[in-house]
Image 1 (spheres, rainbow, N blue to C red):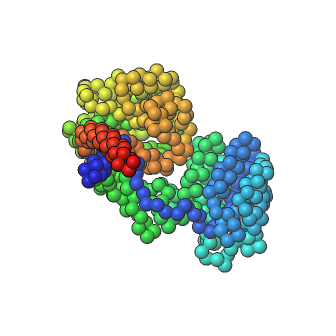
Image 2: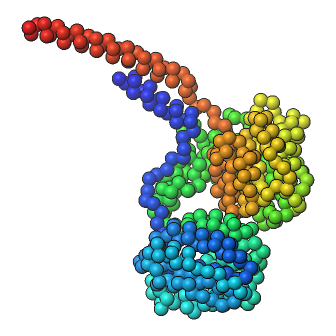
Image 3: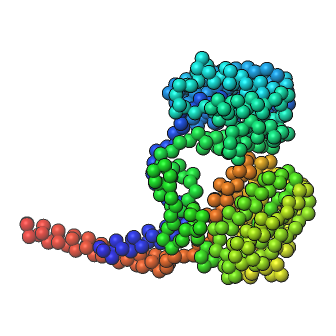
Length: 489
């Protein structure tokens, strides 16, 4: 019996390593939102088309869906503005989530000018007053305003935004399309990286809802949602958490990821979109994304090699595979990359990857796994299908990462099978850090930490012996029963 139990435990342990067990986490309560007085301040000026305004309403509804709505929980109001301000409903109007969602559906655009400063002033004078349902005498209740705009305001916003923040409001600014980025920064609370968001068009604004769902989420057990930074094991501590790794893995210097590529050689090339739509500040985030993934690799002469290619209207190899044999040198080279700032020829870039990047003359190693990570922020200006299919036919493992106006059909065409595990999309460049975490867990080829095949064979043999013994015991039992019956008679 002990032998059977031991073999079963070994089999289970081996199976967990062989199939790549998912990150472990501590169980805990579902996400709850902190009591908040939340007012949406929504631009419906004439530059916002009716169909686009409907997409804004979808975004509002998705954020509301994630909230704990109630008199003693989160209260929600909506200000609709253009040349004037319309109080669609105040913090005291609707006491249930269902009522709020119905009220949002009925909001219609005003279609005049863009008086953003006037709208923020209205929120101070009216929306966040006790008469309208704000809980000014409850210091534990947050006061939050989310401003959504797609244009340059026709009035001053700097001073009124400062007054709003001084009054205790936390201001988020969401800009769409040709919005003036300086305006967003003047509106938003500090730190600006957490309070300013930008999307290229209204068609992707609803994808920002996840960011606000997380912003309002308050967890007692930070491991329980699974949306933590730990690659393998999350261990909860009061108000925080620490990361750990499974047996046979080591925790990297970042304290979050695990070294799963210890003995595996891999040729990994980043194919990075440097087109003008990316913008310089976002290109810096792309470089951080590359270095985040590099951090999880075991870089070395006989281990992981990394190369980087940047493309726009043309293709430029930043550095080939094998030129740098340490994480420090790779990261340094990535930081020095200059932004090309032209078109988006993704098909041409993938063809370059096939024809040049993985060749022996450019550092490619025969018999070593080839991985390509293609990043883009928009629709390709050339045809990608043939090159994407060829890369996969050659056995390259292709990952596609899209941000902003990237076309998800193109990402799926680039990605290897199963497609759902090899492509990632987000409306916001700031989400690239989260994408990087997911990639860190996928790109490494894990070594077999135990002789699973031998143990499976052993277990099969044990099962066969047990079945044979069981059959013999049953036969003996039947004979004994028959003998007892004869004696009784």
